[in-house]
Image 1 (spheres, rainbow, N blue to C red):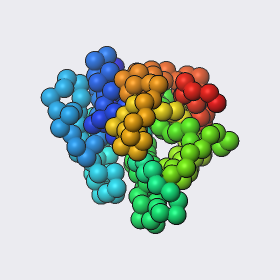
Image 2 (cartoon, rainbow, N blue to C red):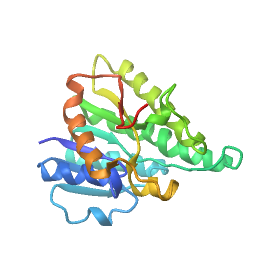
Image 3 (tube, helix red, strand yellow):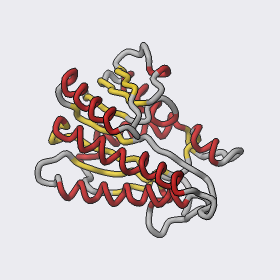
Image 4 (cartoon, rainbow, N blue to C red):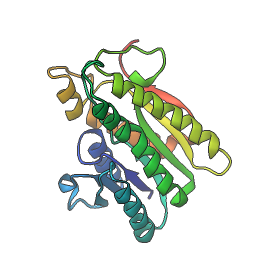
Length: 224
């Protein structure tokens, strides 16, 4: 049994990760602003946390240390996407995307690191749009650039913690049929479901650190 922390856990890929991990007998600490979908599920321990609120992140980390002691895996899955032309994207919107996709990841990771198993695994969920040289799409300047920053952060943390652990890796996801995707691209049908991707991410979180550290793995069924 592993103790797994998952952010962005109330819907989409995050919810599927939690459900599968709990079904396999792992202890799942699930973060979301809305914890109603996570209530009364065996092996899932929901915490209402606003990742834009630093005090709530600090309080959450203290609660996890007090109630669970140590954790084995952190999956930074929470994300924000705005599909809007660069010229029309306000400074506040651009900053908001970065606060969710980069700054909250850094903060949550920093405050949980003291209780993460040195042989454990931190998995950051990035995007194909954040990979240099990949196909880019108009309207995603804030989202894709923030996911690029997350990739670099992952590489830096892997280097900084290479000797003491844990391992850090990023998964750059292609299109997945989630509520966030549907809101940003109405009518678009992705080739993969949230359940399929959730299963893949959980398996990678449990086993990928045996083979990778500081790496970015594209997870996309489309070409290029």
